[in-house]
Image (cartoon, rainbow, N blue to C red; front, top):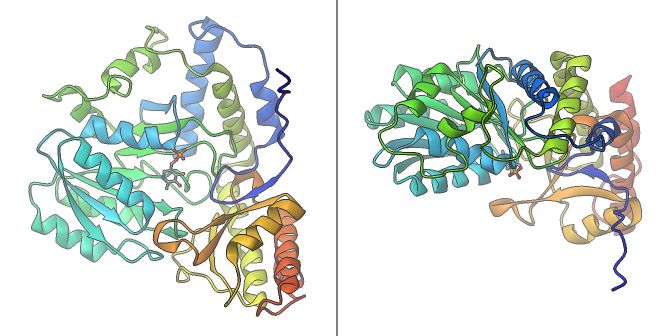
Length: 392
Ligand SMILES: *Cc1c(COP(=O)(O)O)cnc(C)c1O
């Protein structure tokens, strides 16, 4: 056998996630592994919960990272809150709403779909009509930041409608956490899940979640046991619950948690409002560059995510060849379209540590050069200047 150690290339990650990981986080992850019931580790877990409450802007006692990626946070919310026979209203304006539907149906419940076009926010009027037409519904589920299209929805308004109709809210905040304003308590979101590899700039593989008292009451008073042993919060809380007493449930991913702890310390140092503002500022500059070049945004103004920029591909351009050139020549990754948007858009992420001026100028310069080289119908040579002007 002559297989050698794996050494990945150093890339700039400006796709839909993972985003560039702050070197401080990688350094934290290389610290010594200790036992997951070691009192020192248990203290770190308590700090983690406190740091996550800050990130989510909540006082919820049940705030913790699920030991698996964002999709497992999604599943944790659905399997714990939904019982067979329930009716759940699911908003779909991109890929991730479709996954919510799958989750609902696998819980033995009925999903009532509220469908909006890909690339726009969820329409609260349609949601209100669905709530009125389905008085038996017990849950409203929606994606705050749709990473497949770059659209943000009005979580506060949707949650208020749900509560008027006695529904609890499940909100996907995988891409919004730390990148766009998200206020779990003020907006009264009940079960919220996120991810570590988007605007927290941590490695993939963990999913922070937070549950309101109203949501927790549903979990603890279920008639049917949660179908998933691993995700049953009634069991997980014996491990992550308060009081410093820990019973073994599973072995926490120790070093991954060091990384998330560091990511959250970095967020606290910057200040969450400053993080939101930084994402907006870099988006504004990238947008100035794209528009000068002649690339148009898919999502209407006012509904755009600053951390995920979906732009249309110029006429006649082989979009995959452009991404390949960026990767091979510039070590730069941008995202392709997903689902209904495949082949139609690029998704340029400015998430977390990757949301900075250097990356904005680098990406615009690289795209300008590659597209010009292909004789694509763009206005060449102006994008970087437009972005630089936007920073002044
Ligand atoms: C990335 C993402 C997920 C899934 O997270 P994974 O860590 O890939 O499992 C879920 N929802 C949204 C909106 C996402 O962007």
